[in-house]
Amino acid sequence: MESKVCPICGARIKGNMEDHIKYMHPEEIAKQEMEMLDEMARQQQEVMKEMRERYPGIYNEFLEELAKDDSREIKMICANEYLSMNEIEKAEKLFTQMLDNADAEVYNGLGICCRRKGDYDKAIDFFKKAIDCGEVETSVANICDIYEEEGKFYEEEKFLKELLKKHENGYLYALHSRILTMIGKYEDAEKIATKAIGMGEDDGYIYLAFSLIMQGKEEKAEEILREFNEKHPDRLHSYILLANIYMERNVEKAEEYLNILYEKTKDPFILDYLISSFLNIGKMERAEEIIKEALKLHHLPQYHLLYGIILLMKGDDEEKEFEKFIEAFPSKEAYIKVIDIYIDAENYGKAWKYLKKAEIIYGSDEIFKCIRGNILFQEEKIDEALEEYEASIGVKENIDAYIGMIKCFMKKGDIRKAIEACHKAILITDDEELQNELRYLINKMGG
Image 1 (tube, helix red, strand yellow):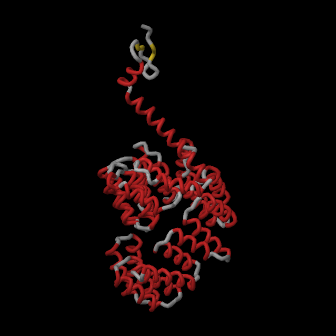
Image 2 (image 1 turned 90 degrees about the horizontal axis):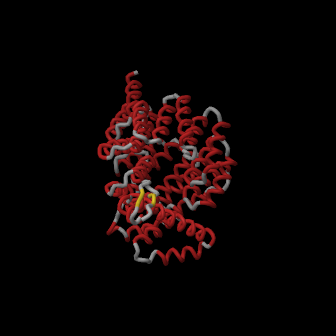
Image 3 (image 1 turned 135 degrees about the vertical axis):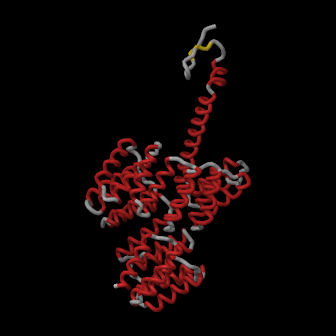
């Protein structure tokens, strides 16, 4: 019998080649099957994308019918498709139907739905369940993003530190390095990032550069980022950091890196970054060009918010865009974002308008009472602001209201009461800035 050469191991086989491959190379068969499934999924996604873009009405009807299928795989495809379309309620309904046999993908899907709705506590719970199912990196990244959106940097650092005791890997060390940089522990961040790189995690380069930039070691950071670019020319974080390095000292160079990013991707979150960055360097026309393109490409609420900011800066009718943002993201958080924008723009009349609308819908809780205090403080109505901050704490102790009280007492020249408020704030969060503020106040009173 004529022998044949196995294409995998090179051995000469006289018997049945299929049997040899089946029993001697099962991992290769599994790999080929997975590649075939991935290719089928890719082709399916391309077909669905084309149909969605060319025939949106027909596509929506098709998707609704498809979602009625009992197949878990088909429900998952439909749920993820609804997520990509920002149809949160429809996606959440399908993910919920799969809870009886939930895995990490289901929990992550529900976590993303809750996150987009602004229900962050519930989102974190779902992401933690995904971690328990064995999927760590995507879930952790989402949890960290939520903590950062809420400004809970110390909670994030504690969460990652605890998680690393159970799941020690380079990616988690890279994230730990990032949050350490964000809370000002730059040298610790540099060490942790170097450890991540040593474990083969290339994101460590990004966070190492981040920590170096914050230490003023910009030339060394540029070397690290260029090394990263050589290894990963298609990765984008390095261009973001390089743009950030030059944002203050060389606008033309920063613009060069921003344009490279624009040419490389139309990812919605990169477009978000580009719009904000072009605004920061005074390129409003360029920012407006990109936001108009982003609104055509993606149906994400934050683009209406950003476009509203641009229109506000230009003196045009910004409210229509803010209303679209709130309509697409109907939540307390959406109102807070709009109110904060008007406070920053010193347009207190419209800040009051949106605050009162929000209070009618959601009631006046500690957050809205604190915002009332913020507006009154900016209007120089210090005693009224102080009353609102005290009312906010009366509902629930919170750091923002205490900080408002500190500012009020300092404005009134009552250093002793400012110190008392600072002590109470530190009991909630042992923040380094608050400790510095407390030392300053004690020295001021002593002086």
